Image (cartoon, rainbow, N blue to C red; front, top):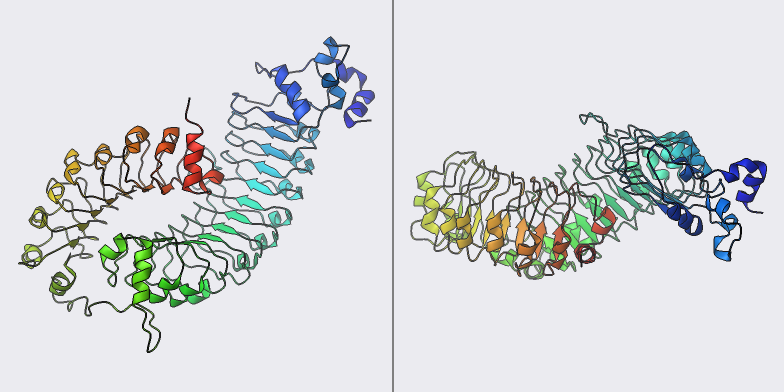
Length: 588
């Protein structure tokens, strides 16, 4: 005798009620009937303000069709129904859940993301078969202790929870008792206000995937380093100043610690990462990379962009990297033209600089020495003559003095670096270099517009304008017919600048950390040379499916936007998977 028959026998009147709904909400009978057969019920996006009672009682009450059909075919034997195992209530307006949740003890998946829940019922602890619980994008103030009784829980998603008052009121702590979830394999705590993680988290012996992106973590408990099953660790966009060591994380494949305040990377941080495939250190304050980076023989992707690294260890050349990002560093020992040729050329160059005789070199020997003149000299003439570099960076000046341009004289200049100053406009005399300069760095200034003088640099190939106050680009920039890479990160753009669509040579657009809310996939499809598009941390509410037609893209970065699809699991699979996902959703 099934459990349902037992319930019906105990309360014969219960079996002959019509399916009840609450308020004006109506759940189609056909949907409920199908759910009794499949064990799955999807009520996503139905504007529900509360869950109808007939949903909680789907496996308890005798269905309405039993009153109307007294001769049952094999397909209509409601008493042989399947217990509900998957319930999706996402994208509604639910403020609470009833304790009647306990009437669905067979649930393995409960998805209630994107509602307005401020708490969860204590009865959730009775869902002993629950394996996946998604309560992301709600207004939870705390994680209920009852969740710790869910011994079979493998996936817990609680990202983006907050109160109506957004100031310092997001999820601020994880109960230590959560460590008693022995089956948990995936824990997503991203986009909250977590200041710390409990040391007890190390007791989650089966945890493979831990996502703590976009919090305010300043430290990581050392116990985290003992989590032997951990494979993916996301700590982007926090306030970390140093990394823990990972002596027991032998299976760790991906470590993402970009956009923090990490100042040092030491041998101790690297020597245990024998399985690491992806190491993301972008947008930190690293000044050097230890020689022990060569120990990471499995490493495939290394992102060091936007740090303060001036030299690289030659031993890096011995790694079999597929992707190496170095943009935004004040590298002095590798010429820009080598970096521009890509990962394999950089590695080849580093290998060529390894000395076969003598002691091991920590850093590559630069082609020239004495990279800077004594501090009393305002213009680095040596850099002009030897490196073809006009460098007046990190002076905190509002104007570039004429003597800087005068020092060029008859020398050929290919690179200009005026970064880390207080410039409100681009120096007009930069136009004097229009027939030779290919690389201009104006990052970390106070530019609110791009002058026409810059648009006259005929050979400009690489342009760095990040960390300024720009919200538009002039149409005249389409005359930059050789421009390959532009960095507009950390500005004030609300749309992808129209002129970029009309620069067909562009291969890299970096426009992360702006307020971009829209882009034109049809125009972007015409940009046949575009291989890298970084749109991280913008205001995209949706990703147009047509973007999937941009088949030239090799790197598409979308993390940190408020869109709901593609989900994080799709983004984590990489660019090819995201593009395929988008193409599959293009209306036919």
